[in-house]
Length: 573
Image (cartoon, helix red, strand yellow):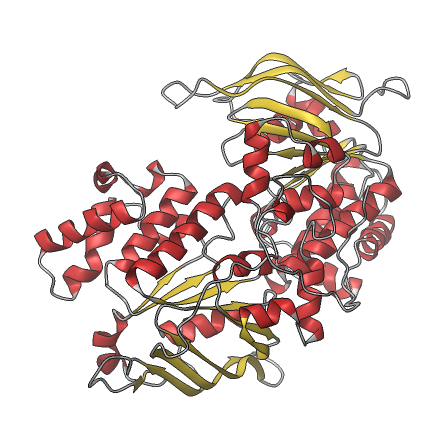
């Protein structure tokens, strides 16, 4: 069933979706109305908890019974599917509407090959023969630009990179040419160059298939790359709706302006540095080789880090940037000694009078234990970083108590650090699941500071957060570095984030440092083609935002692109 040619692909009319009783508000979304036309990309923007994903799941009929649609209509090509039976929704999924989920690893079945998972869509919805299905699977894998289609369809999800897994999810969504494609934060977990490729792929496929796209994101840089129209949600209310040009250049609502101002830019934040500050960490020739042992065939060596050298001074921040698989996190884990380096030196300390730097690279566990408190790490995912069975107080004091600090003194220190990270003392008695992602990350930062470290390592510590929360956490890192005079190692794949906090910058590719120097030098005149490609891939880099937008905040020159070629997907609409 489909309506007249001018009927929107998707139309929401005053849709309200309820929340279970006892929450902070009664509705997940309230009286929301917008449409998506054929060949149109509408970006749905807002922070976590604004109702973006709830709307997507409502359209697909994936909402749990605890989140019922209590008012309004959801129309797919004129057909009211608001309360359609499950049998009808199953018939519509993949054939008329399809969804690309945020995290491809959880969207794919780990015990089925990628080819079988695409083929399952065809088996359920078509009467094609096995040979015809096989041909169609290979054709869609080629269309999403995956290399070696035969190998890809025979691979399991864990054998592919994050970008390749996301392409498989896109292939599953598009294999039956649906008229509506819902993309729920499909690039949030990807590095900037892979993100640019996926955005370009979505644009190309959308134009080729003529589908309407509802694209959910919190990043206005991504909005600038792909949107025709923009809908902004705040706590379930639609506060702004208009063309990309109107919303990004002339935002009317204060919430929209706040979100846009929170997007990090490529404008470097400059500050005076003490060139004579003592060196806290000196890494020389660090190597890490993983051995891929196989039942059959020769052993394969994977060089995750090769000849990595840099130093970090007290009160300064070194950023390591690069794509997924470049070796950034491996270097961080070697420094914290969560993994053992294969070679090289990691010299810690020596910055205090009478103290001698110690090489912890290959130090035994017994000798290393008293030194561990001096280097602490904040991980990427705050959801998995905290023990769900321990309240905040127990999580914070565990480390210091294990190192001999009295419980009362540890609790007093915990209260002080919670205040430093702008958390109320009442959080001490609560559990991780009772906090938002940004609040959990603040708790993780406080836990790391409980050990009074000399070096704080942040491994992609803001990549899982909304841009507004991300901006707050970045500011928090900067305040902590300044107040406590810490040395910081900041790992990120996003040069926009690095520009906000880093004094020195090391760019990694394929396990090696390809560019290293003061952040001002690397941002102002990048020398290596790979660094220039990272700059070119930053979403929204070429869009002329209006007053108050991300490109309008901050000062300093943007680096020249020098013609670096990257699939940035910067198709201006």
